[in-house]
Length: 324
Image 1 (tube, rainbow, N blue to C red):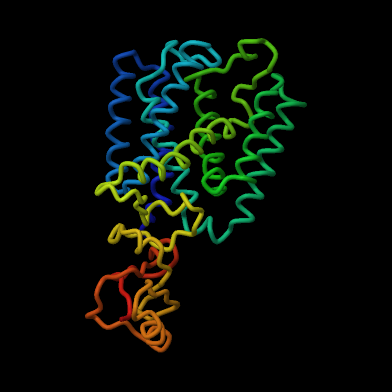
Image 2 (cartoon, rainbow, N blue to C red; image 1 turned 60 degrees about the vertical axis):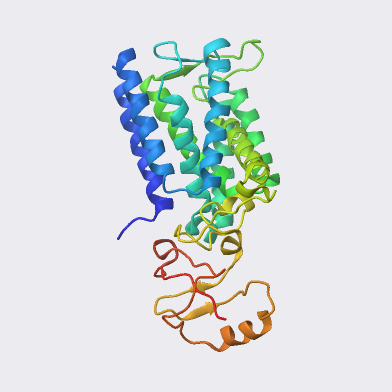
């Protein structure tokens, strides 16, 4: 069975993290730069299949995270890399990590299991934070504080499933990176007042600030700089999580705002499950036809309907269609 994009990208990122961090344990500075170049190439390759909104979100994360890296690692020394630098693979690596979290958060599976996914994230995160405060050989107050931040994002954020994805991906990244010795966290923060685990238990809460910045800035930047100067954000069917809506479409065939908003679903055999008709003079007439239609003719024209991904929702992808 072919993996969907939303499942394949996180698996690819997980494998790349393991390979790059493993190679970095013995890499020279030159080899480290080569790993960085390879990571940039991979990021560009996976972003080629994304829409403008997702690419912009990743760009925001890369810029924001790079500034944080040079401040907290390069200047303050809160954590230190093996060669006491910021490795070349780290900036594009943040882009891959965010994209993996985004894919997990927008997948059909997570939207079908919202409560269990959020509940598992909270339970595992709370247990880890409690362990860091009470049983760890290194007291971890920072991890507990960051877990509190994660709870706030899950409670008040518009995209809790993306934050759940960030918890999974970043926890994996930090455990692998610190376990291999690619980087190590200092026992305390620069003030000496806040103890830090290696890694901090609630590290995802820190990463969620990157995600929140991307999700908050992207629609505003799109509205301001969208082609044509219309002042409206262009919706992308591949970035439904920016509004916390379930991914009703995942093909890349249609990227217009109307297509992203529609909820028509076509199943195998082109039978109509449910229909939503774009606003217009013929709305009532079209809705009546959609309600009685058993199949979609081969001559239908593209319109505002969208469809679920076959690999995600066990539905075969067919051409976007609307009744008219």
